[in-house]
Amino acid sequence: MAQTLHRRRARGFTLIELMVTVAIAAILASVAIPMYRDYVIRSRIIDATSKLSDFRVRMEQYFMDNRTYVDGGKCGVADPKDTDDAGFTITCADASATAYTATAKGKDSKGMKGFEYQIVASGAKKTSAVPTGWTSKDDCWVTKKDGSC
Image (tube, rainbow, N blue to C red):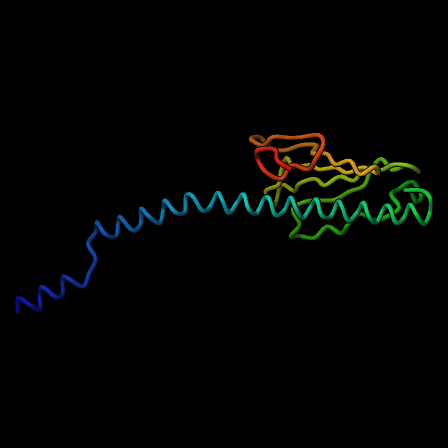
C-alpha cells in the first residue's frame, strides 16, 4: 500500500511547479504582446503607404490623359474605398491643375491614432504626424518608432 500511495503522489504537480509555469508564461506574454502590437502597427502603416503610392500612380495616369489633376474641383481619381479593417483613411485634398496632396490619416478605432502620412504630385513623401514616443521625419514615411523609413 505504501508503493501505491507513493505512485499516486508522483503523478501530480506541486503548487510550486505550477507557479513557476505560470510565471514563465507571464514573462513570455509580457514580451510577445507588445512585439505583436508593434508588428500590427507596422503592417497597417505599410498598407497605408502602399495605398498612397497606388493613389499617386492613378493620379499620374489621370494627369497623362487629361493634363490636369482635377475633375470638377476635386481630385481626378476617387479616394480609395475605406474598408472596416483598414487602419487608415485615404483622402485627396488641395487639388489644382498641377498639384495635389493625398493624405492617409490613422483611425482611432484601429489603434492608429496620431499617424498621418502624405504624398504630393512631385512624389515627395512626408510623415505629417506620429503618436508620442515615435520619431517623425519630413522627407519620408516613418515605419518604426526610431524614425527609420
